[in-house]
Length: 329
Image 1 (cartoon, rainbow, N blue to C red):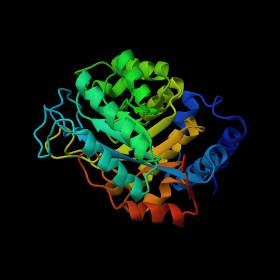
Image 2: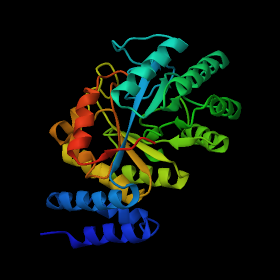
Image 3: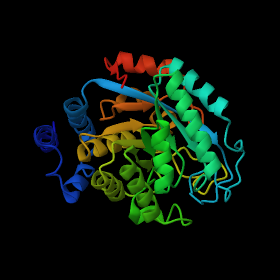
């Protein structure tokens, strides 16, 4: 039997947006019985179609600086607090970052982000990122993004001048759970960087990782925090436990729980871009194409920071088979 309450909630969001949906009402969405999970997903799909249409954007990243990070994020193989077998290297050269951008453009990406490990880059590293961004803009139609840890206002201004239009800075999880994941910096430091990004005029890409051990209530908390920050894009990752990290023994989220989580973020943030990123292959397995029905309108293609993705061609085919158009903006 169809859960009419769920469908009525989705219909109301389609008509009015999400301002009427309180934290308590959103929490009720995940208390539904398993047989109504498809109703939740159907509602998220109708919300996505209303606010984002039937187009999907694709983005890609390069791990431009790997390892040696002083932060102790429990999930991260790049942390110096963990013993993993990932490759470690300093910031790539300008030519290396540009070549990778051209390659991902040819593979079908429309957005490209240079991602670096560590708390914050130094001035010389920021200059190198800026030079790479300027050349990428000259040689490709890619929208250039960056994820560089913490920023000062002057750093944010330099990034804007180089042509970087979006800055990615994940909150990772809810404030109430953050100390269980990271203790080497405060949640408010992340919020401050997001404020600097917004003041500089860049778009904000901020989300988190699901499956870290957080509760459903904390997923709702994160979704509402991102709503209050008015971020432009919400990247959702799923924990892919890496040997040597503190979370190496955490189980993967079940596929339907992952899809239910995507739907939850769409109900709470109906007008925002929601991108599905790392961990989707191992978590969703044969359900990967369901991310769009669950409310996503973006997908990261290619490899991730320290783990392998599947071929970009497979993702392009997945988008086509779902009768969605690739957003070129």
